[in-house]
Structure formats: structure tokens, C-alpha cells
Amino acid sequence: MGGLLQGPIYSTTAGTHHEDKDVTLSYDDLRRGRYSRSYHIYCLTTVTCERRPLFTDITVARLPVHELRRLHDEDDVIFLAWVVGQ
Image (cartoon, rainbow, N blue to C red):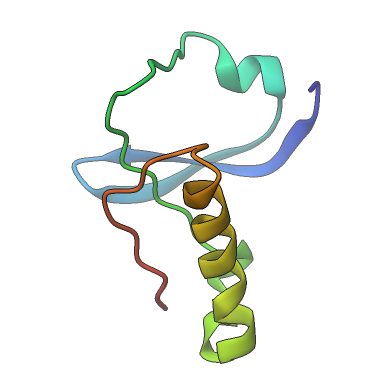
């Protein structure tokens, strides 16, 4: 993959977020020390860029819903639950 993630890096401590520093990380840097296991449960959380309220438009809110359904229907993942909100 080899892509880069640029911008502020946020760390989580006891549920609070704080900006550490502005850095650039490669894909390999982000994957270092991580692994995934088939048939394990994962909790994923994402936000829109700069937390923009994109999902107030129902047409835009349906985009991730359709993609999540497609992944599930193609047996790429098994979702136990998911939420799209603002």
C-alpha cells in the first residue's frame, strides 16, 4: 500500500483525546505491531474529516449504509451492529 497519513496524531487516554504533534506516518508505520485474526470481534470507530456534519444530508448518509450492506452481503464481513450518526 505505502500510502501516507498526514496531520495531527491523536491519542486516547481514559476516553479523552488530545493532540500530540503534527507528524507523517507511512502505511507500514501504522501497521507495525498490529495484527488481525479471522472470526474475532472488532469495534471500529470513524469520524468525518474535521468532524464535518456530512450525514445531515440523507443522500450522503446512505452512502456508508449501502457500502456496509454490500460488504455484509458479499460475506466480506459479518456485522453484529453498526450506526451512522452525527
